[in-house]
Length: 285
Length: 280
Image: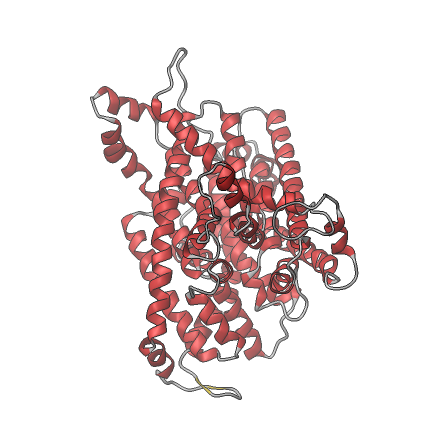
């Protein structure tokens, strides 16, 4: 996206549209973050406070409530389930979509069909995909589970995402670098490991983090394929109907903090790589 | 040859976990069922029941209404935001930061983002208190939460980024010199937009529209949570049937939704070559 920004001319005056759009953009950010800010704030509600304003003191009571045995007992367990599933999904997504992204650089028989299959998988309603997979497992007499059907259901969502992200990454990749390596006598494997992958690394990292967070938050595809052991979003969903306490907001605050930390670390890593490497291979996840 | 090897894992997974279940779906939608189980058959009753039920029409009508309203709003917001980011923000670093600022909420759970609106819009919510503090109203506004309004707001909050991304990607490919050329040739802002920018950005707009449209048509969580039980959605009716183990009618209803969405997507695909936009 950074590739072709209009170069500013010195002394160039901003047109009125700039101010109009800047206002719109600021309002949009306010709209994006306003309600989120409210739940972050309310998660620090005092022990006697409720799910709306006013704040009755402030405390970390509701954060502790997550770890307290009782209604929230399943939160830490489901959290670790979500994380381990997300890591597996992320690794598989990276390997498979990077390979496919490289493969799609050439047209091959069936490439169109596969492309539209990926589009269909992306836009198909999540609940229906989960329903179909769950139904399939039932017909085959298999048990649904975390690392079988739920993993598969999430891959139908993260793989198309990874593929399209890889298209954006691969588009900016100059084929002549590979050709140069080939001219110097590098084998196909050496080209991949020493030329292609290092150049694509920032983009690949973006795909990994994207898939990680998509999986970590995924609800609709997982719900019918998970079997009996819930992941975190399913647990939260179950809580919405039963619990009306700021604990839910505390979970939201923690979830957001975790996402922020992951994205922050990744961005830092990507910026580092780009600085070390100079102006080539610019892109973001 | 290498290409095939490289895409094989993707193809295998998509076929096994996406295409095959969909075919199974299609088959089950023709099955017979009663309270105790489902039986292989070829009957059209499930479809007949679905089409002849007035609630089907109502649910599709309400989902379509939401989809169009949300599509119009996200298109307006998404295009303007993308335009601002690509053509008005001059420093690449600032642009990356602003883009991330838009994208980060997208990475938090949709469930959390949906329920975040409840304390905000509620009767004693932050927004009402703000309005009253500013003396805009004297009584809290009741229509804010658990209404169609709340549903639309939540959708816009959840899905605008899906429009910003593809549109920004299209806009970034437009050479700014073209815009200057249009201006030098005497085109007004609006003329430049209509005859230069829109034709070049239509792929991104179509892609964003597909994403937003399909998300809204297939949602059931937001409608359930935010409408206060006043509106139904296609998928919420479906999940009720799934919970009741009535798989054949659920599958039939799913197939109708799939065909409906597929027709709309195919229509948009005819206008633009999405594949060329993405791969090249």
